[in-house]
Each structure stands twice: as C-alpha cells, then as structure tokens.
Length: 68
Image (cartoon, rainbow, N blue to C red; front, side, top):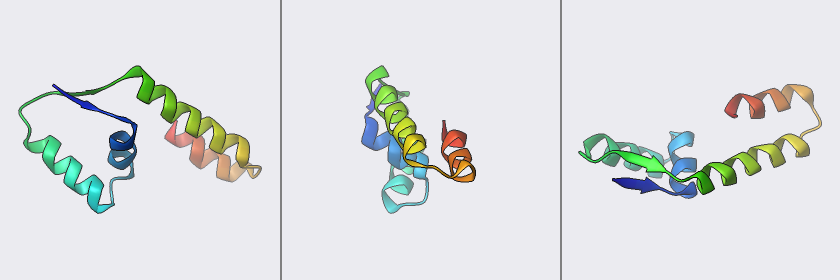
C-alpha cells in the first residue's frame, strides 16, 4: 500500500506540473493501492478554507469552493 502525504495530494490535484505527471505515471503503473491519511485531508481542507477567507470576490470564491 502506498500512502500519499499532503504534498503528493497537492501535486496530484494540480495535474499539470512535471511532478504531478510523474506521480500519476508511477501510480498508474503500481500494482499497489494508494491511500492518504485523515491528517492530509485536514491540512488540505484548512488550506482551502484559508483561501476562501482571503478571497473577498464572490466569483473567485466559487473557484476555491469548487476544489472543495
């Protein structure tokens, strides 16, 4: 089993960076399942909520909420 940390998940979500492409390739070719921890989920949620609070434009907030 492969455990992805917060940095891995962030790159996985971006999807376009060289790191994300390399990670997606490695996961696609791995026979092992991959998971994450609740701590990583919490860190990502806290980051999204902080981004919402920093954004005063409602239209920009929609983009952040979409990621949620």
